[in-house]
Image (cartoon, rainbow, N blue to C red; front, top):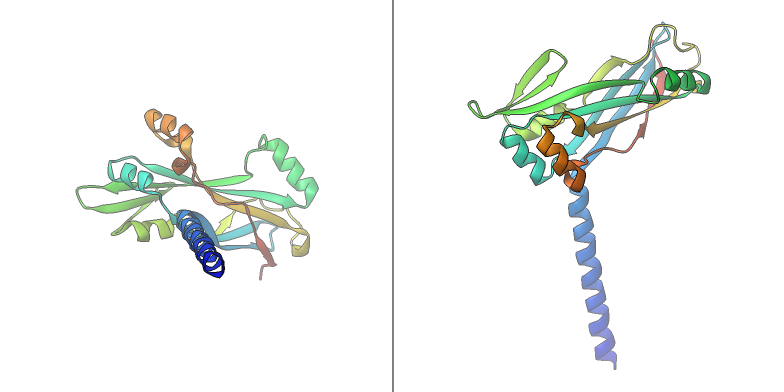
Length: 198
C-alpha cells in the first residue's frame, strides 16, 4: 500500500515538473516590457522611454530569414487625466494616442539585420541585437505642447505596449497569421512610471 502511494506521488510530481517546464518554454517566446518610464516636461508634454525584451517564435524567425519584413508598433495611450484621455480617444477614433513603427528585415547578402524607425536605419550582426533595439526609445514626445499640466505629475498616467503589426505583412502571411498564435505577438499594456521633469 505504501509503495503504491509513493509511486503515485512520484508520478504526480513528475507531471507537475513537466507541466512547469512546458509553461516556462511557452513564456520564453513573446514580448515583455523591461522599462516603461515617462517624464512630464515643463512645456506640458509627456516624454516616454521604454525597452522591451522580444523573443520570436521559430515560424517568425524563419519568415524573417526568407525576406519577410516584420513591423512592430510601439503604442501609447493616456489614461489620466480622464478628460484629456477621453478627448484623445474621440480625436483618434479610439486608436492609440501615439504610435511608432519599427521595421525589422534580414539582408541575406550581408547576413545582417536592419531595423528601420521612420527614415532612420541601422544594421546589426545578430537577431538578438536587432530585437534589443525594437521597442527601445528614449525621450519620445507623445503629446502636443501644453496638453498636460506640468505641475501635477501625480495626476498623469499612461500605458504602452509593443505589438507585431499583422496588417503590414504580405497578404499570404496575413492569412497564416489569422490561424496561428505564433503570429499574434504582443506585450501586455504596461503602466508608465511618470515623474516630473527637470
